[in-house]
Structure formats: C-alpha cells, structure tokens
Image 1 (cartoon, rainbow, N blue to C red):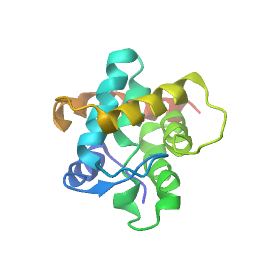
Image 2 (image 1 turned 30 degrees about the vertical axis):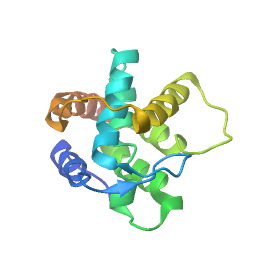
Image 3 (image 1 turned 45 degrees about the vertical axis):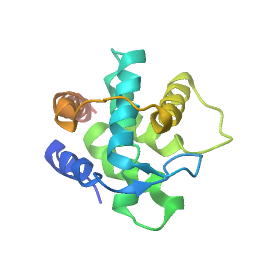
Image 4 (image 1 turned 60 degrees about the horizontal axis):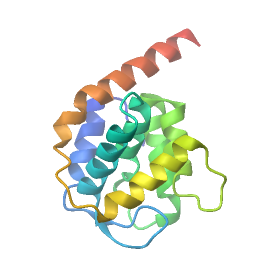
Length: 149
C-alpha cells in the first residue's frame, strides 16, 4: 500500500488508536497511537529543526496496521507506504530503525533512542492533529524535490 496523501496517512495514524504492537527491538507491547506521538514528541524536543526525523518517529509504527501478523515485514511495509509521500530519508529511517546490529548514523541513533524512551515515558505527547502541518510540510518538500529530479 502506498499512501498518496497526508489525509490517508492521518487516517491510518488515527486507526492506530487502541492497536497494540511491539515495534522495535524489544518485545514489550505498546499502544501504537500513543507510542507514535511520544516518539515524535521526544524527537521534536531533541531536534526541533529536523521535521523529517520527527515524522519518521511518528510513522515508524504503522507497519502492524498495514500487514497484521507478519512482524518481520512491518518496517519494510511502513517504509514502502510512506516513501512516495514523505521521501526517501523518512522511508530509510523507518526501514532501518528496527534492524538491530546495523551501524547507525546519528539520525538513526536519535530515532532508536526516542523509540525506546517512548515505550516507558508516560507524558502527554499532545494529539495527532498537532502533527498535520508538519506532515504537510514534509510531504510538500518531498513533492518539490521529486519534481526537480
């Protein structure tokens, strides 16, 4: 499934409410919706100017909704779904975030750390609607880059 609009992505992220999964290297189950918001909020605090990294934190856990039951393919499925809309960098971060053992660049290290902390830290990470503008900004930037290529 390839997401074609921010609205489709928002619908999918809203569908994460009440869905439980174990995204990441640990098997602890989390509410995917709250986990996505917390991961993105942690990245926003640490890297406020890096919207693509924040968005990667927001969308990294959508794989279980796209391909239920097949945990090994969740990162690839999520990356493929967002690549066209949000760009190659976001897709790469989503795809590689759960691959243990791979050398991690600084962005991937930040994402992995926020993912892990987003499982344990109980704080109010806001609401999904707060992220619509950021998603639209990243999608618009990606469409302009695609038009230049």
